[in-house]
Length: 83
Image 1 (tube, rainbow, N blue to C red):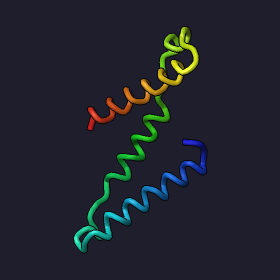
Image 2: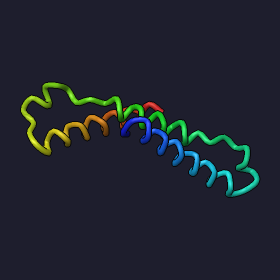
Image 3: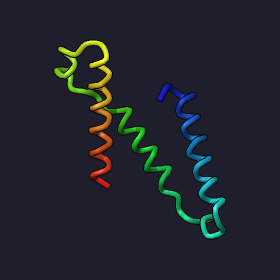
């Protein structure tokens, strides 16, 4: 997520998702909407994920991005396994 503007866009997206869910019936107007918190947590976990420095020592070009991607996916898998 790119800074404050990206966070604001993400929050607006979540608000839209919640509004859509709540608009799908009277029972959902007051129902809990835990998905937003789950997605906020997933974003925080992915943003905090870092590859091991030794994994980056020999990486070049696109491989560096792939190592970052792999670290984020591993962190998200751990989160999913913990819930």
